[in-house]
Length: 255
Image (cartoon, rainbow, N blue to C red; front, side, top):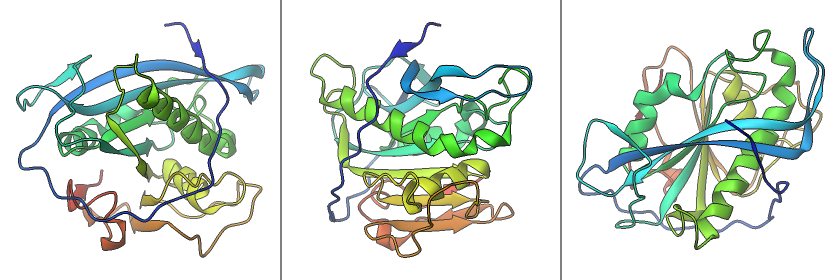
């Protein structure tokens, strides 16, 4: 699949406190689409015998509420639902050597409850990486999350897009597992790469990392954060994150 060049990421600096949302009466049908995006503004570093290269190719899967009756299947290319929308966005960051499909069961549940889940495959952190995944690219992964968020919000604003009007850009959260959790912590609470568009986070088996050049923001305003250890089978979204989560699901299964 050929990569599509997209404009560099831009990050606005304002956030808004929003009221809680009501839970959907019934689950949604779930659709999915896969995109091959290229961020031309950043490099993919050398690793092993592989040379560095310009740009970062980020294959991204989007699961979303779709039109039609609820179904246990995921419908590729289905038309996005608008009843009950616009919908909150959840960025999902997979763990080291993983891919978004590893978390499909949980992600589909979130989408069926009214989330648009955007899951990038980190260029050097997934098991399909040529030569195998590498930890050293961790510092670039927060930028990958911000980049794909920009693309999705751009599609939401484009009248020609399949996603037009489906997303509430004021309600953006992030979920990360393991190395993906470190990535999410950096994008919400480190001066290196903080993205103020993201206002809630769930950390699964993660901790603050020293791999980032910025300083940790221990009292980041406008963010709600919940964490779970790898041994925890279930965890609850925080009440403080009501503008993102409780309308859709009170409980999310961890892997």
